[in-house]
Amino acid sequence: MKFILDSMLGNLSRWLRMLGCTVKYFKKASNHELLDLARDEDHILLTRNLTLFRRAKSTGISVFFIEGMTILEMLANFSQKFKIPLVINISISRCPICDSHIKRVKKIDIADKVPSGTLKHHDTFWLCTGCSKVYWQGSHWKNINATLQEAKKLLESRIKNTSR
Ligand SMILES: [Zn+2]
Image (cartoon, rainbow, N blue to C red; front, side, top):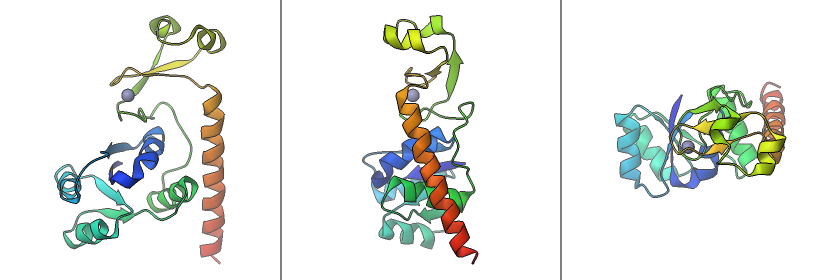
């Protein structure tokens, strides 16, 4: 699925890319520009800006108002709406920074791009085909999965509550 996010949703944009969504995000884009892009490129607009939400609705643009104050609440809200599971499948993940595809690479191909300690302790690496950033499942990987687990729990409790 392809999304365009308003400037308040920078953090969410990185999560959605890791989950495999195509995400357009600009730190500085006017409401007018966001609406034009959403319409012309057939992206779903995600926003926390009520004015922007209403304007999109009134002009027939696909738009969803992201609820929640924390990233956990936002992820749960998003997953419930679009039925996108809160699990990372790296084969479809996109670069959280630039939205390009990432590809598995051999250790030797990135040996000069990562610290030697990292190279020693990890065998699996991915390279962004856009910005050339190298990824591996380091200590931050645990935090990423823990956050997704928390968001999943929140989502499950919501589904339970609404089906009562
Ligand atoms: Zn990148």
